[in-house]
Amino acid sequence: QFLYFIDIFLPNILKRSLTMSLKNVPYKTLWGVEGLNDGNREVRKEIFARIKADGFEGVETFAGFWRMEGFMEDLAAAGLGLIAQVHSTGVASLEGFRYNTAWEVAEHVKDVQEKAVEAKKIGAL
Image (tube, rainbow, N blue to C red):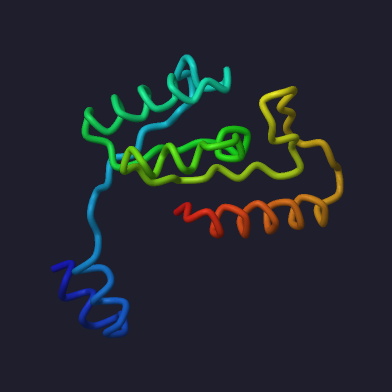
C-alpha cells in the first residue's frame, strides 16, 4: 500500500530515491568518549580503530573535535566518515565551549551557514 501511495502522489525521481537509496548506516557519537580531548593522536587513533572494529562507519561530533589538528586525517585513516554537529553562535573549541553567544537571529543564521560550509568542505555528511 505504501508503494501504491508513492506511485500516485510522488514524482518518479522522489520515488526512486525513497525506494532504492535508503539504508541504515551506523555512526557513533563521540559524546562522553574518554581520551579524545587531550590532543594525543595515538590515543585518538586507537579510539577510532576500536570504533571501526565495533562495526561503525563513522562518528558524529562537534567542531571542537573536527577542527583539532589531524582529526580528519586520523578519521580517514581509520576508514570512518563524519556527521558534523553544527551549533550556532557557540565557541567551538575544547577550551571553553559555549552555546548561544549571540541574541540576534541573523548572527545564528550566519554562524550555521559558515559551519555548514566548513563541514561540507571537510567531507562531513
